[in-house]
Image (tube, rainbow, N blue to C red; front, side, top):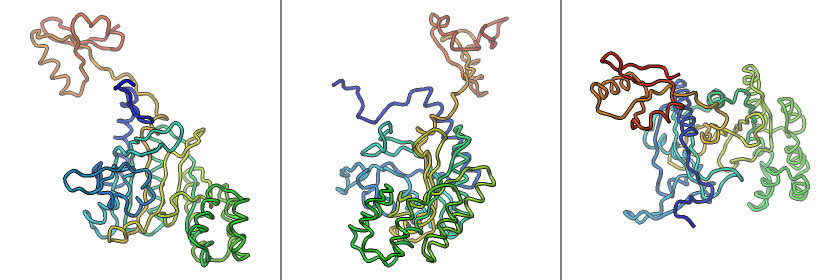
Length: 384
């Protein structure tokens, strides 16, 4: 095997794509800043017990592990930056009231999440701490949609769910952990045959609710059907009210909303409303988020929390190509006044690319302007 080959599902990002990704990164960070989110930069490596706390529990199999040569303790290479942000909020910022942070950096996973996915993502995300109200959920969803629009996804669709509905339906159910996991897996895969078998020991009311959940998928009208078929339970009623309010708010902004009450993504750590954003004609979700109020407890500070993240390497595929940079072509020489002219143009924000004199003719096709000497001074002329 050639020594320059990369591991499977890792790849280089070449200049044209890198330029699009970098522009999108800056645009998303600027958008988050306009909502009041402050940038944080967590380290790529952390002690494993910290990295897998709370949200990170489900990431154990996705985390590369190694031993710290200084302390002898196990380290993890982050697979998700969300638990790092929660740690920063709990222990470093430690503020009362609402705190908003955003981040953007590489995360690496042991396995790809799809056939064409990468094991290295460029994760952009935003997290809002300290507010239990639905306003926080709506804000992070609106910010996610705004960031997708920056990437050229103008008609993103939003799938909404709420894990309180499943918890309400399962309340009081006396089953072992393995049986409970099997029910959750059947709900997630919408396997009705398996679900009928697994719920035989449930009460009639609970069985009816669990069998109804996979069918409760569609537009906001699904919520009315859910009120009819699901049992009266405080968690369920509050969740349906919240989903209805969110759907109405998004509809007023022209965002298409779908409801999927059997969405089990992140069930072990999400505590309320969750969402996935989809681009037209694209099968995979391009942004995911939701509420995870219990995560801070693993860091010693229970805290209301909601947020979202997306892989900018994936999302950049929807962005239009960058226009020609308008760079200025110049020769590489010590001709009188040339270094000063080039330096001044760069101070003005212009891009000046210098090449050996014998390569200028071949490079003209890639440039629209050239720095030339005329009447004893250097001028920028258009290339025809």
